[in-house]
Length: 528
Image (cartoon, rainbow, N blue to C red):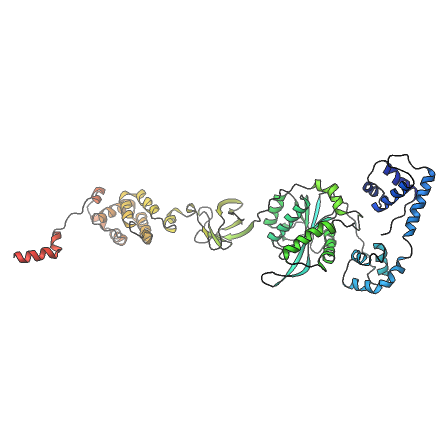
């Protein structure tokens, strides 16, 4: 790599700052030169007997220092870059056709060819291998440390699934911090909310913190309504940004200059990481991408800042990030559903009850589900909470049913008996005997009919009819309805509730029990 030649005054300024105990990084940043240049001039100063704690250089030492520096620079200019690169023109043309980056070309040409990035660019432009067209742009003011992160996706290639053998398209999710140019790469095959949030959490874990603002692409999992002025975020991604503490700033559609750092980094990932790499599966690719982000992309000297991204990040940006707790985010799922006629909603192939008084059938409500709970919202108000059920499961709260239907829906005979007892003692006794069998739920419809008869004909008439039917052990709802329908209960004498517990009177022509025993009949025949 070539070095920038400094004037005599700049050389003296390097030595002055060096003797003022400034670091080489600070000197390079203050003078706008590379640290290698500062290091080279300091080396010349030490060769002349100067020290960091000693006196400033004399006039003769300053002149000699400038001469040594100029000779060292001229040493690297043995021949023009055109002469050096001309034998490699065909090879460079092939690399340009493959879309290879210029920085990668310099790596492949080294150590046979030593030229600068700009020299290689000019040579390719003069040779007609790259376009010389230039577009005007306005450079934005630099962001503060930890203020902004840019996120984008880029298609890398395909991987073979280890289990199915099918080829999967692999995408790179890249997150770049514009201040330090430190970046992170995460591989994924689906741009779903779960996958993207997993990648972002991996990025915050990699950086050790969260930026204050995240510029994102307009992918559907995050942006429901792309708009240049008022973009509309999805509920899930908005909730994630609130949990992590950053502000989402969607870029405009088809405006790559809104996030230029990550757009350029995508091409760098494609050509420097993916091309020529070997990946066993997605997990192996993610492990390699994280290591490459730290050891290769993070350790390179950036072509714009001329600084090492990871060093700038560690010294100036890491402490400015928002804290990250390291707890994986439970990704929610939001759906708008309709309450069915059975007072349930369907969410992720499972059923959950909704309160009938606030959400009658046909009501549109919002459902939020995570790994543990399912929450039902109506007009922004939380109306029900259920434990998350597997596919085909059901969660029902008995209180969500209308009171008159809860017992039948839940097959609860005790609830109907209690309702009948509340209406009257005879109704309660009738319901108790009706549902007292081995399978009480099989007569729930008859029990519901009993309660409806009390509502239709009134509790006093239903009580009198039940008392009269029970006096004859007639536990039949159809017969009871016949009595009430034809007003037979009004023609009958009043029967007290106490008669229900007595043995019914014997009929006029009732026979004794022995009359039905054949043994007694045989004895009677012999005796006669």
